[in-house]
Length: 148
Image (cartoon, rainbow, N blue to C red; front, side):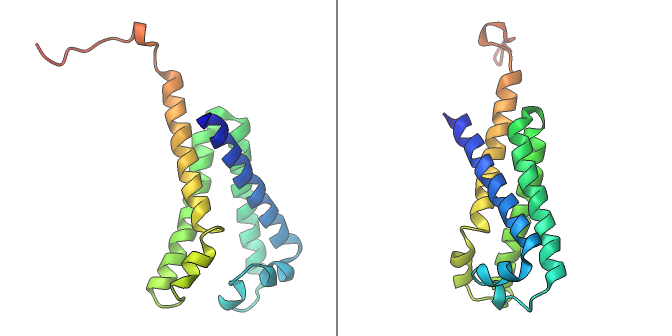
């Protein structure tokens, strides 16, 4: 059950990141005006938006490839999640530095902080599942005496 939820979450994160990345690459002007709050962060910069679009393609690919390649899952999902956390923490820094008002954290939560939290959750699950798969069966475990 938990495994299906993690895989479904990774698929959702991957497809959403891919879609966002493609949108940023194909129609940067439309993306700039469509995403709430973006116009308040600075002037339109086609090159910058497309650069970030490439990052979203890599993130989406990492989540999707992690679904297909269980042995690489932890590394792929952790790498994508690391960038998502850097992005989310940057938004928090902007509020702390007075660049943005605190309300932007709530506005941006679904697209910025929530993916980082979800990425963390599925990466933790993948790490746990990998360790559990490598653990020997209870009957064959070597018991260590803790008390003499």
